[in-house]
Image 1 (cartoon, rainbow, N blue to C red):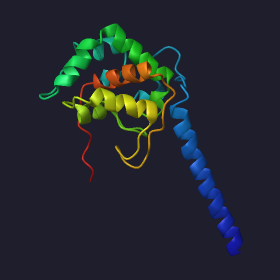
Image 2 (cartoon, rainbow, N blue to C red):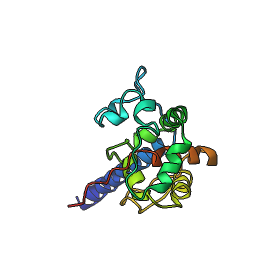
Image 3 (cartoon, one colour):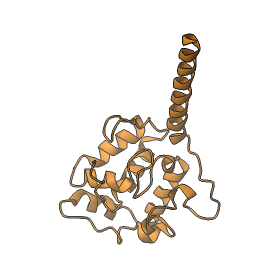
Length: 175
């Protein structure tokens, strides 16, 4: 009887780990959203209006209002036109970033706006976030590691610029 319970427990652990690995692998596989007409998938529809509809209008540098001390974010946002912001969001969708992230809400990983908040005022933010996207990172946002993504250095920099150009929002306090 004990052996059967041990075998079941082992299989459950294997199944759980398989799910985690599949989820992590899915983040880097460039899965498209199932939505065909809109750029937002059902998984992101619960986010606020800054992630719906026309991303060029709501995520444009003109709509970006940095908080004090966010000098580098002004440079990142000013360097990205509305077209570049839309292109970078499309790249994020194509690379499957929205499988684990949303703009203003936590999914598996942190909200992009939380990342922008964490790194506002950090002169190394673009390099740090680009490196995390391309090479993976663990322990920055909790126990779930972000696996390395299948992107070129240029794509990683473009995605990092887009993430850092989001309107910074402080993550909720842990209770």
